Amino acid sequence: MSIHVNPYSDTAAAKGEESKKMQVERMFDNISPYYDVLNRVLTLGIDTIWRKKAVSLLPQKPNLLVMDMATGTADVALEILSQRPDAKVIGIDISNDMLSKGRVKVADKHLSDQIELVAGASEAIYYPDASFDAATVSFGVRNFEDTIGGLSEMRRVIKPGGKIIVLEFSRIRKFPFKQAFNLYFGRILPWIGKVWSSDPRAYRYLYESVQAFPDGKEFGNLLESAGFEKPNWQALTLGICTVYTATVPSS
Ligand SMILES: C[S@@+](CC[C@H](N)C(=O)[O-])C[C@H]1O[C@@H](n2cnc3c(N)ncnc32)[C@H](O)[C@@H]1O
Image (cartoon, rainbow, N blue to C red; front, top):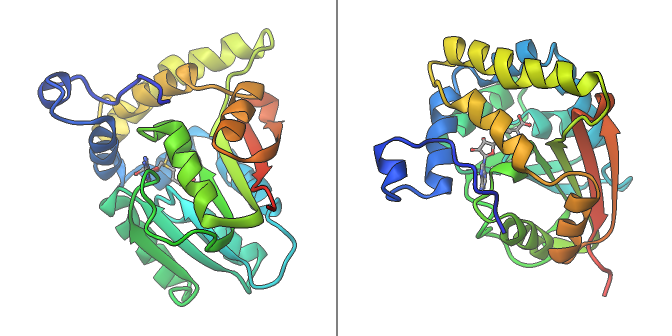
């Protein structure tokens, strides 16, 4: 299962020469120099509060080994170390340029011993079964080429009884917040993103992919289809964003 919203419709993309994964990689490579600053500006800094909330849901065990899938510029990995200084994090991403930005941030905080950032994709994770105590994925799962395939791979590498935490945009449903937010998210934000990031499609894709992506119970069902159990979710900031948790069956 995947959502059929792709970043680009230019020549290579339209001819089908470039998969969704390749387009997503190209898009994040393009916007990597502006990604962090645009996140802070476009969400008025609330994105940092959402990541803190997601990370606070990690299991309360010492010396956690966590996989942060779609780690990007390592904001979640760094937040994990700030809340759980004895943890180790492996951050995985398909965009080398996002990872390069992340490595600089990790080195600046002298955390290279505890945070390793590696190139890779959710669809084929280069780690053995049951390697990690928990996994996080923040604003990444919507971009997977194969949603259930990626989630199933994440389940494979989490230990039995371990936890997945997913942070993802969702759709506001209540009047008048829905109308106000859609105006901002659908029109104003893509315009700011286009001017600032020099990629005219990236922030339009953000809006379109969020509209097409399952949220709430529907996403909970996807987690179950991928082999997780006890899906749970909590809407954040009027439902702009939702944090999901689920566990890997113990036997
Ligand atoms: C919106 S960014 C989120 C980055 C970070 N998690 C955060 O919270 O800021 C999405 C990231 O997902 C990565 N990504 C998209 N599809 C992926 C896949 N199939 N496997 C691994 N990473 C992927 C992109 O390269 C990008 O860095």
